[in-house]
Amino acid sequence: MMNRRQLLCAGAAGATLLGRIPIARAATYDLIVRGGRVIDPSVGLDAVRDVAIAGGRIAAVEANVAGDAAATIDASGKLVAPGLIDIHTHAGRSKEGPPLALQDGVTGWVDAGSGGADNIDQIAAVARGAPQIGRALVNISRVGVVPGGELNDINRANVALAQGAIARNRDVVIGVKARLSQNVAGTNDLEALRRAQEAAAPFNLPVMIHIGQSYSPMRAILPLLKRGDIVTHMYAPAPNGILDDQGRLFPDVTAARRRGVLFDFGNGTLDHFDWATVERATKQGFWPDTISTDWNVMSKTTGVVDFPNVMSKFIMFGMPLREIIASATVNAARVFPSFDDRGTLNVGAPADVAILELRDGTFEFVDNYKGTRTGRQRLFPAATVLAGKPVARA
Ligand SMILES: [Zn+2]
Image (cartoon, rainbow, N blue to C red; front, top):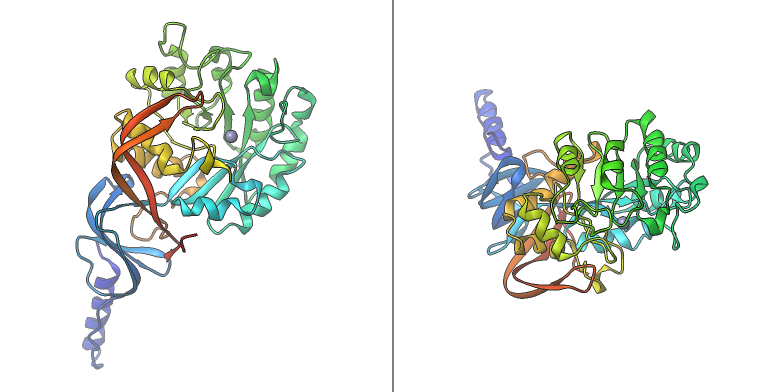
């Protein structure tokens, strides 16, 4: 693979042939992240490497990058991963959200349904003003997420209004969200999902549903999902989660995955997962396609804490680190076309980098029911590079 330095050398050789005075000059980069353990599942890489960045893009990933750089980050002893992409957040609720998430290594986020047709424009404005790439799913309920449940009155699931919201925010809105728990939708879950699909269809957009404690069972909900749709809060406990009364995965769930429905973790704080469901499902091989947080600006004080903390819960369950990183980078990027060139450190990609520290010790993790489990390793955010520039620590 030819990197920037080799290109410059080739240029110098050309100049000599043309009879001009050659100027011996090593490559100059804007930034080199040196000596970290680079885990980039998009290219199957897990090795100590330097990452050189020029012009806001990845210029070289090599064992020893020669050349100068205006700035250097010493990443020895740390993990260097593509910038994290969190596909279930509520980062769009205020302009304070995106820069806070950036501190955790999150260089791309999706606000999953905070806003509906009546208030998505504010979310879209936050996304446009964010330092990193931010996108949103429009809630099929025109009011967005509200206490007491935005779908208890099914008239709020207005297809024409949702389509109008998408049409006027095509640069930000990349899907439709429907929260199907009984405390949100009452008995309207299936009708709300049908309307979400109807709103998304002319734009060819995915629908993300939030499951757990719904009125209808998974076997009624899942047939309404198409390839590329996302089920978040995948380990939500009964009633009406992914496991039957004996703790076995419903065949409908594995069938949905086989036909291309994606399953997302979505940590959250209330009723969205418990350790027993994670344990039973993962023992049957049912791991997340994507890991996400359901983050908001208060998450430091809840069981979410930060994205690397949420990822660490899966270390505890024995998920290989490269798969955990994949679930928070390349897998997440592949869910939405907006993130096509993200989630990778491939040469030429936008230089978004999450530098993480994997610490050994005793770490307590919490589910949504105050259940605690102790892990022996925890990922911590150490530094973030966005578009080739180190992000100042808050
Ligand atoms: Zn959420």
